[in-house]
Image (cartoon, rainbow over all chains, first blue to last red):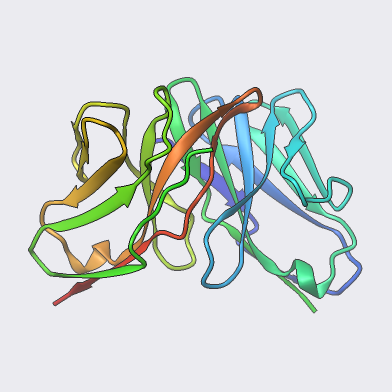
Length: 114
Length: 112
């Protein structure tokens, strides 16, 4: 089945640094990619939707200057958490869809900001 | 946007069928129902989806009521590995693409 790869799976860094997370669709062309955030014992919250070659659309309350999204190709989207602070610590999950494929999710990135 | 409501938690005996209900009473005519599950610390896994008709695949069956206001996911023979949080989602069509808004899901525990 379709696979979405997310990297890194876990990152720990100091407050104030920027962190980039990659999301790749391995065997289908992902015209649309999505980024979610999940806090412990809570459901997934959609952060933004990105279409290849265009600017991402952010959900209400999500700072676009804080969470930079780039979707430069049909197989790769990146999320950069800029100037990360402890409150940005969370589980970030991407998903990809394209053609007749349903959304397929990566295995998530656990971000811990010290 | 269509909202889904599910029971918070359920138990099921190993080997028995697990029936997970979902209400989506505000669903629109062209909105699909999707089911995913999430095992701890992993990304959600696609299970099945449908529009009007009942659907079956190697993982599960999806029963959608005639008025489309509710559905049931059936795992025919639950195993311990089916313990997970199950999300019923209505796919919302937007200009930017088809989006999922996750509800709280049902935490299914399969008991030996």
